[in-house]
Length: 464
Image (cartoon, rainbow, N blue to C red; front, side, top):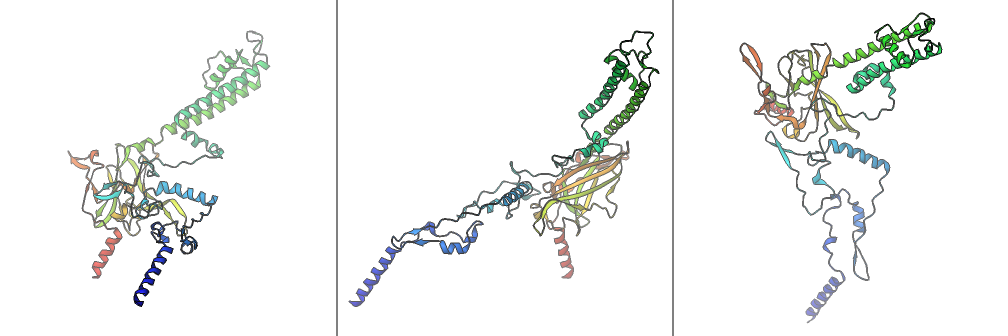
């Protein structure tokens, strides 16, 4: 009997305890550790204020979150600055990076992931299609060689006047022709006003038809006649009806001054026009580059290759080729460099960068220890973000002026494991160029390892 009463009291005590302490609601149970969210409060705040209980009612109170610290103007400017660069240069950040959408803080903790972005394929490998309608890959140099750099407003524009010749040559044709015309019109009108004012002060206008009068400017009776005298004097037309006589010294001085100023304007305008017409910028339109770069092996060495050609029969003299790698990076001190330039060796040490550009040439960059692509393999290439700038320089054979042609290749325009098709053939004792095969490539067997990994494998084979 005593044993039964003891069990009854224990059951009553257990029931009373459950009534006074109800079960913890499911929504109050933390679903993840405090460190699973980038904006989660500190662990000591969670432990100290997770749940509180009222003694009288036996209810649970959910603590309110503490307000976030206000963002200062410096931090807001820094965030906008980083967002501007990240939207242009890191819009296609790889998975797991700081801009990966799968790790967004707005994502729930229920384990549901957002759908992946569509993917496109290149070289038979999966490559994420990071470009979207709102975030496009910003090029530094376009395919036709134009630099995508806006210099912005320039306050001190007087520097352009110190180099007036280059300023005039760089003007567009419509503005250059406007300046060309206005230079002559302004000088004609200015000297016409001086001639007419001098004739009016000497009273030559009132004695035009007086045979006894000795005028300084003969047959100048109006501003129109003075304008005709100015044009005929500066352009050395000399019809004979209007002229400057020897009756006044100021007329001779004005005629000499107009002749000198007219000669200076002729030399400047004609020189600018000649240089502008003969500039070799249009010559670069006949220098072509392949649409893609390819990476394949040559003589058991991993190489980056692209093709250049000249469509004209007149050749480029002393043609030289060089390349730059444009890539953004962050230093160890936290400084962000958006456009860091590094040199790509195209045979400078062996003279391979100097070309005889008669037929299409395939330019080779050997990927070795000094190459920026030394540690880049096929898989890493899909995650890299860079741009290769190609610069071809030479002297135009017809004019002797230096010409420069540019293009660029992004990481999406590099084909791993491809090779260019031959575009040369022997026909009737001469070589024939097939421009239709200039951009064609075909796949070849190439390991997806980087040049460094291949070198390490060879060293391991030698050791073992």
